[in-house]
Image (cartoon, rainbow, N blue to C red; front, side, top):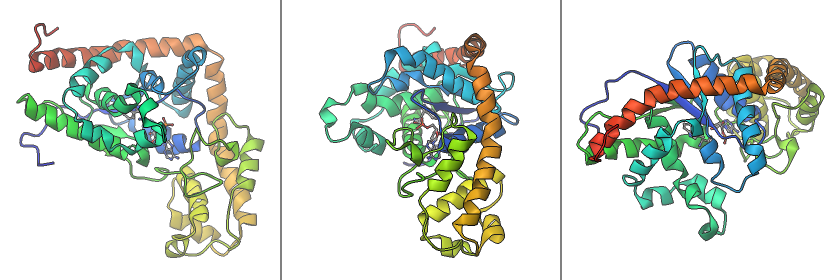
Length: 344
Ligand code: AMP
Ligand code: TRP
């Protein structure tokens, strides 16, 4: 991609989204939620429950509303404040789907065919995947750019989708001779917890869809379940090393050290300074303590919110109104730019 000639000079804005599909886990907490909370203090932020994305795969119709409330509850329990950040459901702001349509006409088939998440989710029988699943990254670009968001905190798995969002923004600006209209959204990926791996197989990321519940720590797990999963986590027989170099080719040990560091807000080396030379018999109980200590308050608040579905709906409703106030004028400009008959 060649350099943008006229840079975007609008305000900075943060946007991210989480799908309402199944239980949230420690990877989501460290890779996404914990980062969102830190950002709300210094930036204009929108955090979305992306329910339109959730229907791109077979799903339980009766559970979708509850799952949407669950993600909102997790946002709130992690510390997002609806007075600071806009918390809303994607399906309450139609701007997302309208912009996705314009972007469908800008994005190229070849770009989407390269998306690894589509290949993973579609599996062997690509012909039977929904068109929506193929188009998923275009809707994601629309989510971000409907607000002209400049920064997008996500886990490492979303890097390719963010690159696509930038390509779409750039091509839109060029195709319609609207230099600097859309920003090139930057992913915020770095930092501890960007890639939390499975507790059972450190070559795979911790995931909602792993058939083994022992592979992940869920936000709904109680303290005993969390401790049991850490105790059963796969490790090697060696004690922890003293240096990061020695940790490099020990993926399981590296993952557990990384989790400890991310929760404590320190570096991996600090953990090795404290535990280097000690075996997992010592390190695992210490890690359990940190996990339980960090997640229990979140789990507690999560359950409190879930007991108040009306209060969650109120947050989502207010958030949806605020989000639409930002997106609607942008969509109105887009209609004009693409030459439609009516701009509002
Ligand atoms: P998902 O559960 O795939 O909808 O992801 C929601 C958010 O959590 C996204 O920002 C992901 O990048 C992030 N995420 C998911 N799994 C992990 C993981 N194992 N480690 C770090 N971040 C993750
Ligand atoms: N695709 C993201 C995921 O699986 C979820 C998502 C949808 C998203 N729209 C977004 C993330 C916009 C960031 C910005 O995690």
